[in-house]
Image (cartoon, rainbow, N blue to C red; front, side):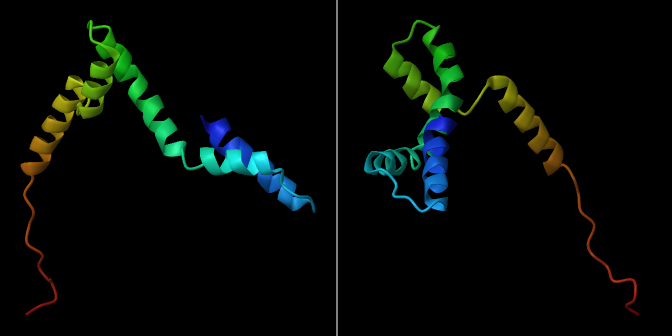
Length: 101
């Protein structure tokens, strides 16, 4: 995904360093794939979740849908809840100025 997005962009930048024209197909490919980097990241991030859901005898569309709406693994959610409970129990002292009389 990175090579598709940034590889063509780097080739274009190298061509522009030397006084040469960028081939039109390469410019189009760069224009299409560079903005898709976020989609590629989403795909790579979601892939393990979709495979896990698909293993639960789900259709591909339903596995993608449920993976997209999931909040993460249950183990991670328990850890986050535990940390938020610990943080919410902390008390703060009021700020005092030791130089006031």
